[in-house]
Length: 334
Image (cartoon, rainbow, N blue to C red; front, side):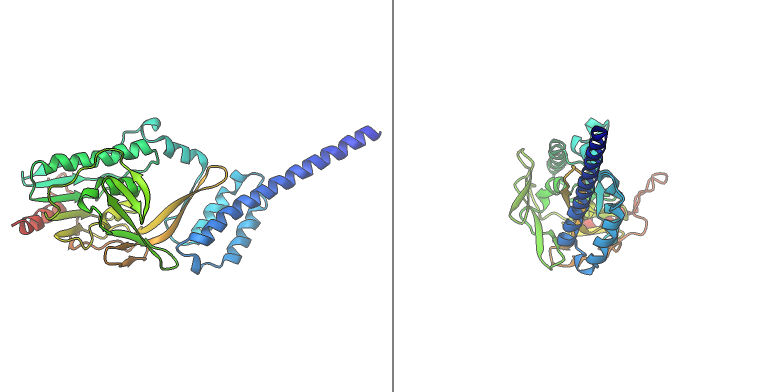
């Protein structure tokens, strides 16, 4: 009788300890995520953290695994009310890390051409993976397009961001870098009022003085940065697409043409959690080269030249936004 009883006690003790350890790891995981939010969220000063911690940990109390806490963390992010933070489980992160081609997709590439044999047209697509080699290839493809257009000596530039709904801002910033070399043209302001800037220099992108991206190829330098630029924007221009648009706000001989952008004018950072999941947290609001902050979600960046129908009408063969851009450039290039 003693051996079965001892075995039962041992099994009970092992199960209890395992359950306790599992519950403890679940609690630690959720706390880790909440601690990051509390320390870095752009809205950290507007949150009742005691309540948020209490509600989240109570919900996580029934979880038997870390994966079961994912909805709890996603719900906590929604409570921050920045409309931009996200939570990605490890398998999604891995897909982003593998890149486009590994997932059976084509790598986004710019479309470019000369318009009326006078103006350079460059459409910059969204880009959304963290595969460094594909990021470099994407950035280089934009600069290659700029080089080919620049060799035709355009009187002005048209940069089309109307279909760019965001993704990874750093390779985009490197791509358009030749137009804003060394300029503090776009940055962010955090919850404590501290400003930071993304700066492009010779094929590299910095966050203030920290190197965050290197194209690893010889960068292109435009023949003249004095030529006028028209940037086409619309409601679909969002997030990182808005960073690129804002790079041109207040720039000399430059106008944004179209409608207000999407209004996701906030800076996100990725935080890898203990199981490989990513907490994508909004930590600041965009600021332009004048220091103006874009803090209102959904307001977007206002164009200099408003065109209420910014989409191209393919059936009619017209594009009012493009026409207004050409009109602006024709006046600016005389």
